[in-house]
Image 1: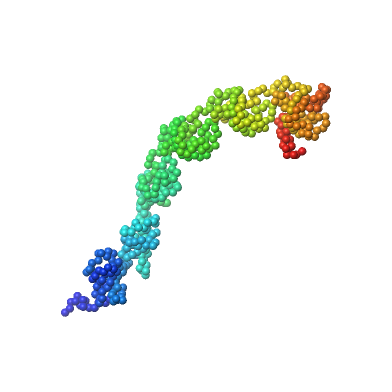
Image 2: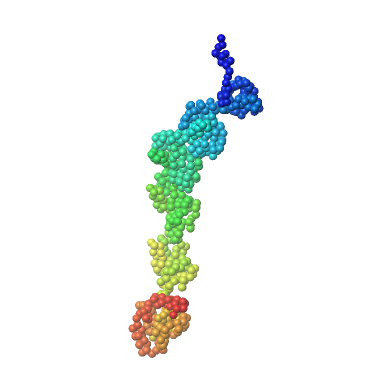
Length: 560
């Protein structure tokens, strides 16, 4: 009687395409392997299907999948890879669903990502490799990782994996743990993840914290890259935690003592200090005294005498300078510095050096509409107001009598130490001729002078002692004159008679037609002049000169 084993052995085997059967390696050829599966003819497998072709051995039993029972040469076409895939596919489906995790080895780089062997080949998109998609994928080939199964397509028999989701999940768990246990004041290790203009993001092993640029150093930093670089490991201090928004503020400078805590003892008021100009602004210069400590030299503290528009006119970036500490505000972390305090204030000695009445000499440094600036010494000017140039003449602009660079003598009129002004006068060098006008001119005197200016109402005649007299248009001729320029010209020498002297108003009335009058005629003419309105004859010299200027401009423009 046959045993069960003998009966099975004698029963005929059935073979069909797609079936997985066991086979024995009969022969190793250069490109293929000959396998006996118990069929009437042997089968062949491509040698490339063996992960390590050299490890294949004759007599070894392997699982193979029948692709075709006979090819053109009557051989059975077998596949070892497809047999493994079919077995693994069924196994993976049984142990793994979408959303599950599985371990696999990165096999190769393919378009769009990586090929991973998890028993069958699965696709790992480049975007799912890491939190930040890597640029170089070759570093992952050959490594084994755990993956999350994102998608399984049974019809196409392909699987999509994600490593990124597992990393994010792990980071989320670590982040929650860190937020729960972290406290302000803790010192934590981290890695610089990213640099921005305002600071650096530091990875605290699952939780990103912001290290603001102002918390990197007690000193001045233009950009975080001056201190840090991406990938750098460092210890940071936890400054603040917002657990709801999962935000952490970090500090680096807080690991060191704040230099402002002992600022008064380091830089007492009045002390001379040295530093480097680190920033120039229109209103001054910031000077670094030591890392983390800067003082401001305001533009007004650069010179006692010079008006400096902006600090960059006298200072340069990175320039080493000396200064004096003027004030300290520890709470606001501000130090006021001065450069001019290194020298003696010339205005402190101005009252002693230039008392009122002192005669001084200097060059005209600048002219303005209201006066001229006379340089008394380096950095110290006095101002000659336009009204203090002449006792007798109306000066509209100092350039009429003074020139830039000209050396001039003047008298000190006043020293204003508070407002840093010295008033000078030129006319005060001589006596005011009007004080002794009675000695120089009397009514009835015949005088000779030249026409200096013409006005619509008359002409100004230059006399001795730098005095002008006014000939009213009615005093030029016995005949009626419509326009003064028809009978007189600037520079013309004329003889006239003094017919009026008004010391209070500082004016002299002249008459050309009265040059040959008798005393009786003079009295009559003087009475006539006294009866005229001020605007018609002897107006104040200031208005008369203004009118003369208007008349001259009118003539130049061709107006009547």
